[in-house]
Amino acid sequence: MYYSSIGAISLIVLCIINIVALRKVENTSSNNVRLKYRQYLLSLIVFFISDIMWGFFYEQKWVILTYADTCLFFASMALSVLLWTRAVVAFSGKIDKAGKLLVSSGWTVFTFEIVVLMVNLFIPVVFKFSEDKEYIPLPARYIGLFLQIVLFLVTSVFAIVMAVRSEGMNRSHYRTISISGIIMTFFIVVQMFFPLMPFYSMGCLFGTCLIHTFIYQDKDAEQNMAINQARQKAYRDGLTGVRNKLAYLEALAELETALETGELTEYGVAVFDVNDLKTINDTLGHEAGDEYIKSACKVICRQFTHSPVFRIGGDEFVTILKGDNYADRDALMSSFRDTIRQNQQNGKVIVASGLAVYDNSEDSSYNDVFKRADNSMYEQKRALKAAAVRVDV
Image (cartoon, rainbow, N blue to C red; front, side):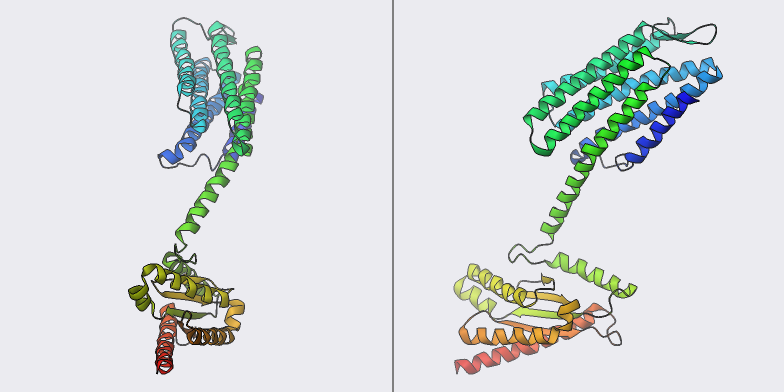
């Protein structure tokens, strides 16, 4: 059982450290590397299972089952080599002559192994069992392992060449691939001389551990970073740089959830609307109007520095007040309106504003709070326009 225990440990460790890599992903071009590597890992799982069964069957002297499992052992081994070359080429992204040659070599090794295993059914060339039920390796076994050694060395050289041509993290990744190939080469050489020891399984385990530690985790982090960057970009308003309507809707969903769970018990809503935008667009053009919107946004952001500001329409902004800004809401709104009155006197940007506070005894949803803030904003908008008329007179 010693032989089988090594394979069992290898299988368990492989599945644990690669639990994320083994998850099924969509067959898209962006997932090509993940798909190829997952296929390689699945082939290793088949190989480990055959290795575990081989140790058990051989110990029990069940020759027929051991024979069938030995065929599976060599076939899955050759398949893993093929899928390893495909994964390396997919990782490099170099589908050129060198990449195609490497994959073709993988197919050659796999085809050779399948052919000699079929021949072995009639004429023993790979392995046989003696009358005492002892396993006897034959020349074709050594030829197959030698071809695998050559192929792993070639992939290592291929990875080193790619490392020289790369920079930063990619260079480190290619070096890791090269080292993994060298480790596999070493363990296959040892396997050639010790056919009754599971050295090949050990090599596969060490190689995949290296790849997981120094490549897969980095790639996972890179992908998550790219997703977060895309998410942040999708949630930003292109003109002002503040959060957009999509971010606003998500923030409302989070707010409602926090209220339901009791994590949030109080908040305020401030609504803003830019005055005279249509007049500026009609008289000075839309570029001037855009600058006017950006100026209005800056005034809002300068005042409400600790609250998220959302642009929910052409000239409409909203901020949700929590924490310190909620506690200081009246002072903040009063100061903001003082700034707008000064702007009105000095011919600068004018923004109407309204504030409302959540009341759990009255408000059944966020919309109730928003409507009160919106009504308050329109009251001030009318007051600002009336003041502007008096100034004109």
